Length: 497
Image (cartoon, rainbow, N blue to C red):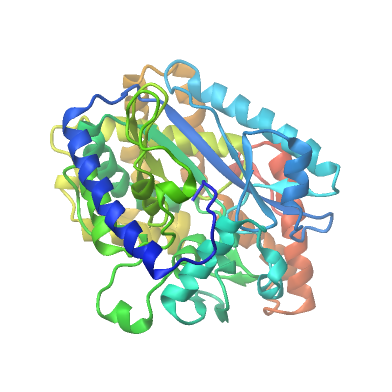
């Protein structure tokens, strides 16, 4: 979905041709996996999405203006006119690589803030911006005016054949039908990339699936959706419901959702691409010829345009990526689970935990995914999203326990060992895993802070009341100030403390 597309709607002829080419791409990919050499340098990458807010803390539809002022290829638009994204250069974990990642992210964030100030707006890194309203999402101005976004929204609604429904409950209940996929724009995330040799990809993906519940519980930062107190990481179910092309009847028949955790451990990266083609009809059937792409790169690796475009419209929480590359192709794993924010140091701590723990788990003699069922991993994922840092998760040899206890007793030490295996500097490990451990000890993450801050400002004022609306603006303004101060979220004070 990162590439532009030329149309908003497609003809039956275009869809038929695309489907044939998609099958051909899959066969080419199968052959290429078996015979070609791939880059395997273990490099990492990071994408981070932002919201733009005005002086009051309300969303500001100014992303194209800010991007025009930035004039920087590291930044690009996102689907919502109040969203944008930064893409960090490829880097390495070893030595002080994570510290350099933090520095580079801070530098780009400073540049973004300066550009935003010229338009009287401020970027905020947060999973779901609490001050977005139903009214904004029903206004046609919510969307960035680019073909790829309108094409995606049109394709989802036409595939579904009816309105997009959001229905979610916890302390509050939110239910509303939208005419397009506008709620998807509220879901801003941090995406971690890890380049993996094809023959090691299955281990890395399985390990990533196994720890998904821990990741989201510890990093939850989206508890306030459209002013409602919902899941600690409401972004996950909201995103899934926004892009769901299934009617209730198809859901009851067992048709897979396009936002998908998966249903089994895998043995090869090919398993995931094959499932994508077998289970999901194309949403954006734009062929290579229509897009102007060649068949091969200059070094002779296949672009696989149709397969890659289709892969971009199946939103696995851990997604496989095939990239042709300038010298040779590579495979990478895109970890899409984490919300944006709260601060740069928090996000790099999340990255350190992920990269370190994956490095440890793929080296175990008896891997964790052989000792837990896939259903247990999925249940952990849902429990972590619903209950956040207070979640109870299931783990081999531990049974069911508090996620914070699991992190402190087992997973943080394993992440430390994994980072040592990756030759990360000791002081870097101590800093970032130390932040992660402190978050677990205090029980304070972004979602916890937002919920407590709303309580402090508004008590139990009902949804839609003037008191709650004013409190939501105050939460965003104080959150933004804390984010700019840069201290890890477990140290943030609450109003009145």
